[in-house]
Amino acid sequence: MCLAIPALITSVEGTTARAEIGGVERTISLALTPEARVGDYVLIHTGFAIGVVDEEEAQETLRLLEELAKFYPDEVEVSQFPNLPISQSPNLPVSQSTNEVH
Amino acid sequence: MRYIDEFRDPRLARKLVANIQARSTRPVRFMEFCGGHTHAIFRHGLRQMLPPTVELRSGPGCPVCVTANTDLDRAIALAKLPGVILATFGDMLKVPGSHGSLQTARAEGADVRVVYSALDALQIARDHPERAVIFLGVGFETTAPTVAAAILEAEAEGLDNFYVLSLHKLTPPATRAILDAGEVRLSGIIGPGHVTTVIGSRAWEFLPQDYSVPCAVAGFEPLDILRAVAALVEMAEDGRPAVVNAYSRSVRPEGNRVALEIMQRVFEVSEADWRGLGRVPASGLALRPKYVRFDAALAFPVDPGPTREHKGCRCGDVLRGTVEPPECPLFRRVCTPARPVGPCMVSAEGACAAWYRYGGADV
Image (cartoon, rainbow over the protein chains, first blue to last red):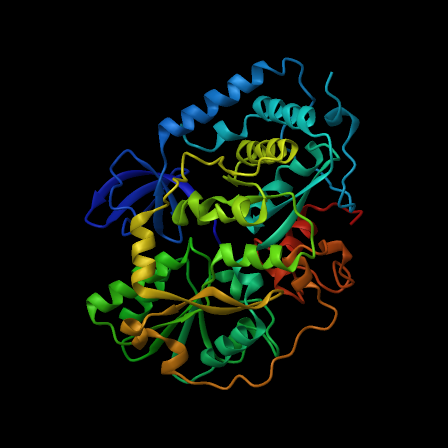
């Protein structure tokens, strides 16, 4: 229910806008984000933009993660984010490969 | 930057996991409030990536799931009134009330329509001036402002056949209720990123202040969630609880002031019934007196009859975080997404649905 998807605003007319989400354009309401402009990314929730995405903050987050990464030159092995089967135990056994820091 | 793939980078995820493993020395349990987080955690296999010292537990952040049977029964009774069109989000249709669901009511002739937005319900009202259109408003602070905006639009247009049954709920009081009950020991809360986009990260300051529980507000991509877990581990290890905004590209300390103003203009805080938590004071949203003519509960008094809980269903316990879905005797045996007994198996945000879908054959 609280799902919100980043979308690029391509045109604005009054309190409505056209926004592109994964190649599809749709009409959204800017009633909750009157500050949104063409070229902004907004978070779309049930047809409304609920917030404008701050690109500088996003870049800063990625920069901080790169800084952190320098402290951990040896990586744990996680190939990607697969839909792996998960065991029943609340304290899940972690596979050896992901559990060891070399 | 499209704000999705950048935050799914496996290389940076490995570094975050290494950081979590290096920092985590004692067992901690963090609750992800939001059902959207639960599904993201399962979908991306994040549970398996974390060290055994870090446990994640689902919380009550699924609006469909926390809707009490009394409220659901009222909605079903409203849908059955002659001349009424009841519009709501798709997840609500299959949720079993005391005696059937909105879906079974529709099969019996009620005009129940699935909409993507409150604005769609408004359009139905415009298209059918001779019918009463009731929008079943469920959702937290993310959704409530959108429904408030639709009500303001109806008022501006003078639409007199549009109504809302407000079952909107507030997330901080529910979090308080869980901590006050003390049934499940929590070392930190993963704050809901889109609720907090609206209410602001300051709204969670009560967690460190009143409960000494750290909070990290998270987005919904793997790096967002792992970053929040890393922050919570650090705060738990250091014994310095605070609120960390790990979703700063969307969440501001003060939230979305326009959305909050619109929500507060239309709604006032009220008590609300929660599945699992019971009646929680100041945890719901009711229409203010100025907008009371839009209130479906007042415009159409109905008697839904006595409520009945589903025998054996442990949705309420799952929502409070006291049990995990496989501990429910009905899980997977009787209760499945095709034939759900409780709402936690119905909703795309329900914990039982996440365990069922991603839990693997051994669950």
